[in-house]
Image 1 (cartoon, rainbow, N blue to C red):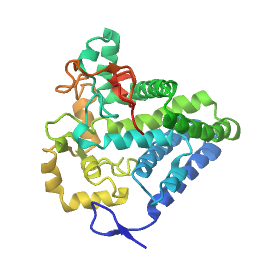
Image 2 (image 1 turned 60 degrees about the vertical axis):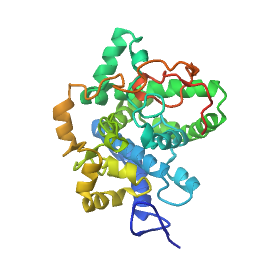
Image 3 (image 1 turned 180 degrees about the vertical axis):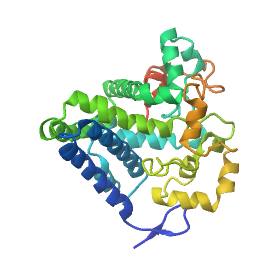
Length: 337
């Protein structure tokens, strides 16, 4: 039995086998690189594992949007083994789906994936942290220091939510802990990879590779459609599961990764007009422009310029707030999962 998904003019299969096969290949590559490459070629193994963990992150993103099956528990089961260690799938999914409220994109409080800070918070930061966040808004900076900044912010956020008694967050981390109880002994004892090398090598590299994609995915624009980038071509497109065509994904979030390029080609001029020409030919062009120059200011250029009087704020974080180390306050109403 088949069912149409929004954004495409063809019927979608009940099981998307290209994605299922890619998930199987990803875990097989994880095992193969550790078992066969690590003993003889440890540096090559670390690099390969970094790419594998980046791919698994892309597959987690795909599963968060209802792929490759119509059953969410099956999709979770397929990608939730935490070989990347840091992000519980349920937290990844919850925060990412909130991010897809396009009218809130880039908002320092309402967009869980915003790299902007509220001006009034930014002004209170120590000068050393301001410099660090400014460097993080360059492409080289994001690649080098983005992973520990994002991880620190995310973990601080999650710890605070757990301490506040958020049951959904606590359950997500309990399930994550069960996965880690499988992954960590396999890495350390079966693979023979010291945990510190696994963290500072593949885990860090995998997050750095993903940061190439996320570096410029969104910018402030008065029009929501102008906030999301299109990278037309890249050798990394497969690693990112075609999310370089990020506007296409945001406008058709239920479309499987392997259908996005055709969807873009069929309406290329319309897509480019839709986002006001926020287009780069490839990530190399982005690198040339912003390798050592911040693409965006740390403080949001328009939103949250001053405290909003009459609204109660407290340092309860609703998201990973990756640019701000997870410390941005939000309205005091409890977040809903």
